[in-house]
Image (cartoon, rainbow, N blue to C red; front, side, top):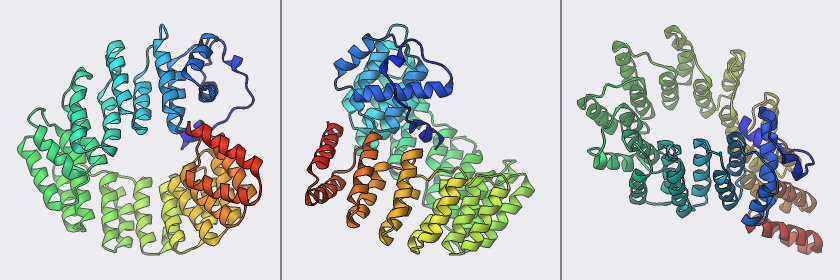
Length: 478
């Protein structure tokens, strides 16, 4: 969230000539410089304007500045073609060598907008200039975007194409493919690809740890665990944690405890992840109090609960509708110096949403903001949907203004619900203001929301305001 706050910073009045000469290397100054340059590029109308702009000014492009600008294109969902033009211009500058971060960010931006042909163009360009910037991480970035919209076969074909780009196409790359399939497709797909390609690579501990995570069938996980040992790969704490997790999710707590004992017999100390799985498993079988005791017992083994462990215990009480105990754990974790995160608060927001409790949602939101923890998109959706259900415009606008000021949450997803509420309540002035705030941030409202506002403006005979909004939508769509 700290990064999002930095990205949402909007500098004051500025003239392009302020970019002349060298940029400061101080972090705060660098953020401002990246903000200003990003805003300038975003407002240029064509690639030729970008080239002309840089040629007319002596701008020093450092890795820090280029990384910062591309990062803003990524998190602000900026125009991918503008980002690519800037990236290519920077790479053509004499004396400038792109960082691996900027290459991966550029690939991510293009992949998100499904411009896969351009991805291969960029990779070909980087292969000619500096092949070392193309890493297994670069491959994961590309494969993750391809796997989201393409078949497993196409994903594997893309994986094979990377053989000509990555100097050492080895087990590390194979593991990257398997991790992508686990995350974007299914464990079944990952397992099938593993069996079809394992003879071309040498599976290692990381290979098996990737494939052990996320199993839903305890039997399949056990069989895979045995295959791992048959191949002479010794399990580590990550391997055992995966087995504990699948037992806990399958409500086989006794088997999970047996694995923990085996870990101790092999001098592998269970860690906080092990105990967090146990806490979650106890909650699934309706034993939230015993799960809370685990928070105390783990200290006897020199392991201390973290935020995720407390979240698991709080989740158990929220599921059991025992909010008093859940709040007690929230206070306890803060007393131990642990800062609740957005996931912690979302556990409560979910309960309040389903119980239609806006009053307690408002109080918890204030507590969250006062603690310095910024809501994520899920938090915002729980709150704005509850506001819509209860037709509470004031709280919805307060949430929106906080989002605009502090830069958290998805403007697109939240604004859809917000505009519905404002239009239903006839708040046209407020809807127009929120629309303009969103556009100023560089985000395009959905066509559905725009049509709703358009209808109200036509009924109110506000043709000039409607023309202004229509023009802004046209610019964002171009």
